[in-house]
Length: 406
Image (tube, rainbow, N blue to C red; front, side, top):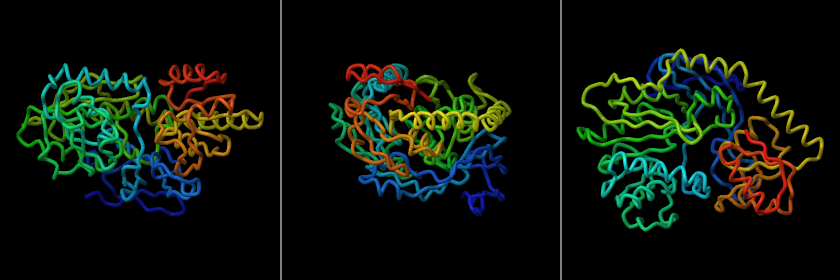
């Protein structure tokens, strides 16, 4: 059982005796804090007032020098309340869809995923699971409290079952030939407990492959990507800390690599009967991660100051500035910089977000077509991988605006 990690006194955190949720070692070093951020970034609110009244918490990142893991020691698991209105679907982007298609085809070919049983833990709305089942004529089970059966139209729909629930040992009966888990582990505080549950559910079945995808924290630290640090992401992995976790839970790491503009970290692993000591070439040491943490802590304030000054300058010049991308990066960008008043509108291509308001921020989310009349001077893109796609959309609409990416 994870014990309370800290005491809080007027937003000042004092570490008491505690354990790393990833390796069970004692002692974390704090290196970054952001206070009063919304506890969810992707729960869409119907009114501005509800968005402004949304609960907030703190991000206080601690580094474990034993396993290289980083966690938010101020995270409160009571806010892990995912539901169908948790809107994180990315499949409205051609860029993202191509990545998902390429990944699905690669996994199907590599693991001969044809006429197999596939389980996705944290399947969201089911896009990727349905894709795997379509391309390989597979059957699937998706487990996620935010799943919305029927939202995604697919010829494989009758071969896929969605379970609106958090994954646990009771879902062991659904263990298939292949298990995937994409962008879920970073939302889970007791990381070792979760991965061990997956391994225990597999039992003596050693022929099942697990593929897991999460954000790569090495990039966040080295690039000072503060927009990728927010409350829901309570767990931050580098290649080394992720591989060490999987080995400690009874897996052998068969592959470890980055994708999607080096933003995502993917691990492929097999359950083993005896502990594996196989080290992958991509793994870094705990000492290397410690250096990255030190660099981040020493330089992040300069980057935050630069962005604050930029937004203040644009505001002083009466420039119209919008943010493109209303997800978690946007929420982190606006709340960390504390310059919500400098941005009036947030653009998103996801129609399920239009007309909704961003939690903790209160900005309305509008479709790209809104820019035809608004005529912004500058569009700040939350993820540079979408710049080409966004520029094409702006050009097609006849909107002439400067594009600036984080």
